[in-house]
Image (cartoon, rainbow over all chains, first blue to last red; front, top):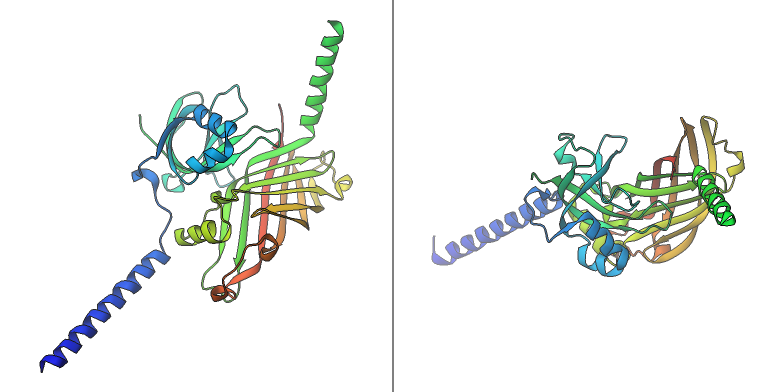
Length: 151
Length: 186
């Protein structure tokens, strides 16, 4: 094999490798699932009451700061809500107030773990926004894909 | 002083009466589907943290949903939805405010399934449009289950679909509401 043919072969091989790597990346990216937050680093550490106050005082500013951020939140468990599939939502905040931080547990976390009403819980979750109290049912900061943090 | 007590008592009674007429949930399920026969995969998502309030006396009904709360099967689709279509940082919330037109025909104190026609306005992506549909109210054990499908023409809400994927994304998204409301007690 002369040198020219060898170079063309190497070039074709390199192109095939590149195309293969591109296709693999595209396949991985296309099928990528939402990140499990258990290993994610929290951008902010706040209490439930602080987070509610921040959104109530300045919704636009707090949206800019907290939206899509992983937040480590701590607060008193007011109650636990459940949807029809049994997925749990831990409602944190001041029990004398109608406003809360609602933390939807990640389905990866399953239905394990017992959370006692009135206890102090710490979670890590993704902030998806704020529901202002324009319906007379209290305002809520919503965190999804929450993972409890052991204390 | 006596008058003040009477006033406070009347205010309390008014609030209690108003609360009894209202049903609500904060765990409502609202999903959307923009799949077409040519879509290579399902273009759908669900939000399980929707808020819904219904006033059984007036028929007023309102849904609120946070755009970033929609869960997709694929993370890439969720990113495209939030960044390129819904622009969720700029327009974080979608709200529907409507009224049940035939509310008088619904007996909220008797278990049963009642057809409901709702008329109202949907605010999404910063645009507000009239939107009406027909759904069902199911009364059972003091709770009200609301189910309805709202067809939303995406161009009405300035949600553009790139030419390259024009036949792969539906022009009209199907917004499905599935909420079970409980009496609001204050």
